[in-house]
Image 1 (cartoon, rainbow, N blue to C red):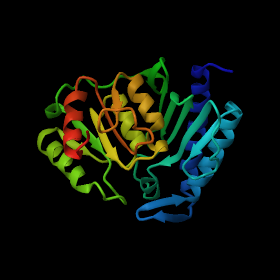
Image 2 (image 1 turned 180 degrees about the vertical axis):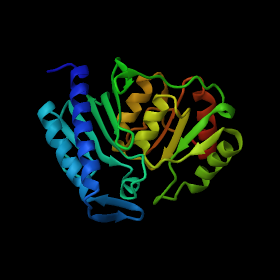
Image 3 (image 1 turned 45 degrees about the vertical axis):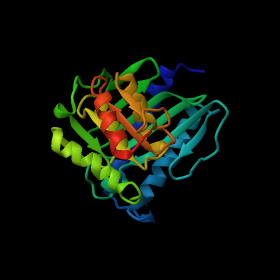
Length: 264
């Protein structure tokens, strides 16, 4: 088997090829379906996923898949791809960047490869376990922010699950009052990539799916940052909640989130 570095390189080439193809095809028009309240899928989501799955199968035939649109759902014993063919579909529909392809590879439950290709800016973020994180081939690192008072905070607004809206608003109120500002870009994969390269200092969101955050979580940790669930634990990938932060900022940031959401 190839090294994870070589696999990551091939995945990056695939993501960029498919992403550029999508940006050309979107101008020709596409169909839109609703999967639920404010939850959309386009013909190009499905096209992207089929293209990605075919390419990833050629890179690592023994791997299984967790893919958003269900093109492949069978898990394998050791290796599994976690794929979001277009993260930020609503942005994509309105041609309002960012929107990204997100591809992560797990080995025995641990993230080992992460690639996020943000189509609007033609930016390829990539990371391998123990190999650091890059943006268009150049090393990146999280910010040096130490206090929430000095931080730019990223988040995702609830769009269909409002069960924790009161707790979310409690956290949001704190950050609006204390931080440099709060940004909602509409693509969790891109938010995490931006934490990894220091454009954002921290990020939080609930009701996330594994394919939203698998690749981005590795980008953050390989760039020197911290990632956890709202209680500071490791259940963020399938636990539907995540915080990601520059390392020095993480304790204070997590404390606000934990208190706001009542995490134990």
